[in-house]
Image (cartoon, rainbow, N blue to C red; front, side, top):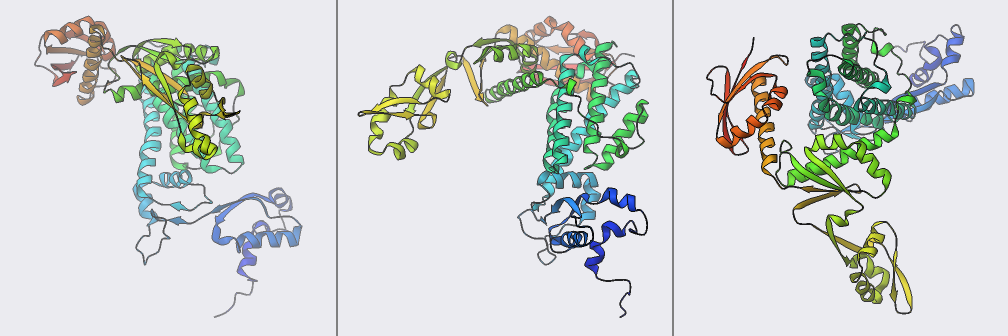
Length: 538
């Protein structure tokens, strides 16, 4: 065995990397000075006494300054039970097999969002599947939706931009959220908080862009007529996808590159050849509307509460309901909800919103002492305090819910009772169902009138036709003829909503005379039997 003469020590060689890579000081002096110290380095925790130390030690000896400004330490990857992986335990994972099955982007994203790099990661293949399905599946489907209708309508991306102020509120909202996200993303990435940054991007993609914006605006993309509204929808979604590709590029380099190239080359847009050569960009502060974002968040919370009530009472979203009551605590809150009224009603399929000053109009409240907190506080005096609490009325309950203390007499002195000292019980008023969360309460009238039942039939009918269209492999632009046979109750409801059904399904004809041609199915519509057949109109 012969020692390599040029080798001083392996740790010296690794620590000399910052200047040795540039052949400094023999050349590239300016290049080295511009890049030393490095902004950050990244390695495993086992390098603490190795590379991390040798870099600083040599740099300090030679240049009297550290070798790097920031350090991201990669902790160990453990198995799903938190055990260190080893061949003897049989709990190792073949990285090439995992990458081959799920893709490198999925593995990288999973490792980033599961836990910060400096904390041990419990590797679980089910987590990979969830990332692939929820995040990447959602992003790919959102892009595919955009591409499908953009190709149909010949959207090139070179059209004159619709001014932001002229775009519908829903477009201005998602662009506001996009630029707010970009601002938070830049702050987190500058602080090397890569996990939090990636999680924000994931939440935006799944919850705001796909589950809210795209779902609420599908009609704008597939409607026949072209115009500023449709162009605004295309341009807004294109801007969101472009912004997302730049933000996911450090974590998912391959998918971001593919979508970026498709957006740029397929739409004829100017820009760098690769997303990895693009600038991330600065958030456009003029696009950010905090009031609009807060209003939409309030609307989404109310919608979530109504959906929770529907699930609890087994009422489908396609079944219209008459009204809801929303308590508001201050005038600006009512104005915020009024601004989002059409969104809330459309999402919940409820006809009207009524407002009350607080939730006393929709629930009956009673109160009882909480001895778990009162006992340790007041000892022998607890029964006197509990007796006073039982006598509280609406004013005292409201004060406690507002975060105020209510004084009660105990002998010759007064002691404060706070919210944690009591249990406030709520009983729904008859005919209404109440749900609360995040400081918001909603009451829903679940009574079904004949008119609401008929409209529910029509909405269910539309859903079954759309399923038949999909099963038949029809294009989204194909016109169809629809025939059905049903009992008198359902037939009467469908005749009443003929125009609505035709508009929703692109049906040129709608007949209650049975037709044996085309694709057909036997379906149940809220307890009513119906046979439906559709055929494409050439």
